[in-house]
Image (cartoon, rainbow, N blue to C red; front, side):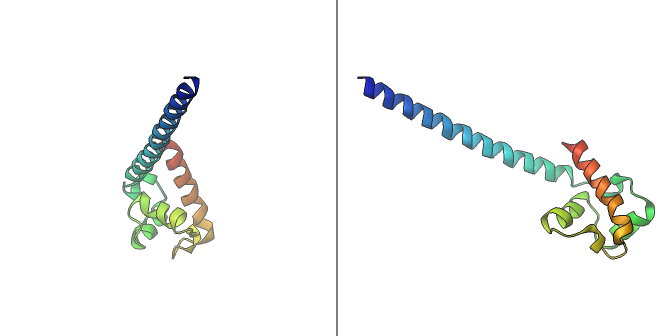
Length: 104
């Protein structure tokens, strides 16, 4: 009888661990979706200097997500954007970082 009880307890533990793992995966998916939705707002909300904002819009960066996708997913340097260069890139990077911190 004690072996049956132990087997039953082990089975319950395994089921509980499986449920917990599935819950964790769902929470990660949810957070990712919320982060993406939260960045689907116009670039103008970053309060960048007008010249930088105009360059970004001209180059097709109309949403904050576009910049994050370029930098994080595409693994590109913001200075690679035509017209931005190394002098303006840190301004954009700091505003992106501020936005991400506030969003979380």
